[in-house]
Image (cartoon, rainbow, N blue to C red; front, side, top):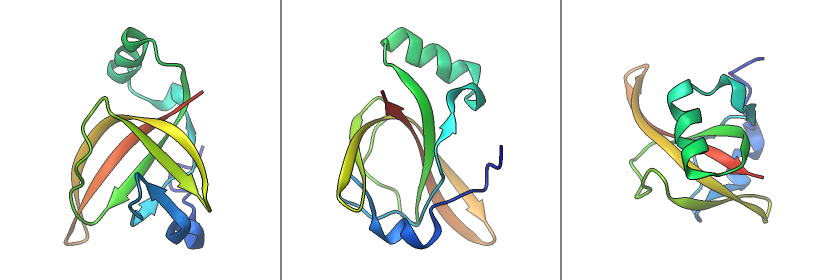
Length: 103
């Protein structure tokens, strides 16, 4: 599994609750998600088999546990906000939101 696969040129056509991200990973199977978060999802009884990382250059007003709408070229789906982390990459801050695709 290549964790560095992204939507590339299509990123400008992605929206998370109406906001266009800086980057968005391709869906990754849930088995790569840490056990801590798998327990959270199991406890919430949310059926998630895949997740993505959605990156922004500024912090967004999303909270963990919130249901969000992710869309690509106008086709939307519900996602669950699992976690948010601030990263410092090559001298720049990014806010990365791990979201689970609700099946």
